[in-house]
Length: 99
Image 1 (tube, one colour):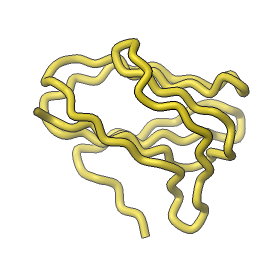
Image 2 (image 1 turned 60 degrees about the vertical axis):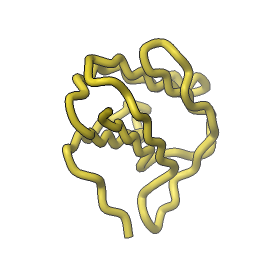
Image 3 (image 1 turned 180 degrees about the vertical axis):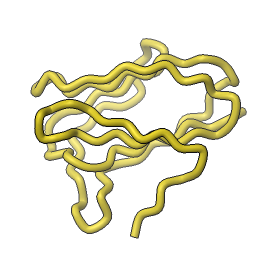
Image 4 (image 1 turned 135 degrees about the horizontal axis):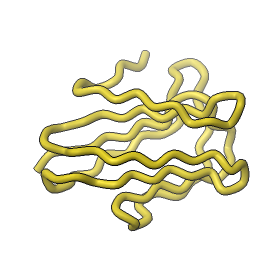
């Protein structure tokens, strides 16, 4: 079974974050980015090989992002919150490096 690793990277300032996979809430916290490494939090999910709908939301700020991923092999997603409250995405077949 492939894994989906989601890293909350830049721009997290301690406000609530909700993450859903296929409509089911899998994460709720108030992470803060550690400026030294550019990472706020990380979660790994073992999921079946199929399409999955990933929903990311910051209810207090209105920032959100929804995407569909086809998980055929391990996949790594990096989510960052930009200054204009948009959510940027990095998608990689390899793990992200942090110092």
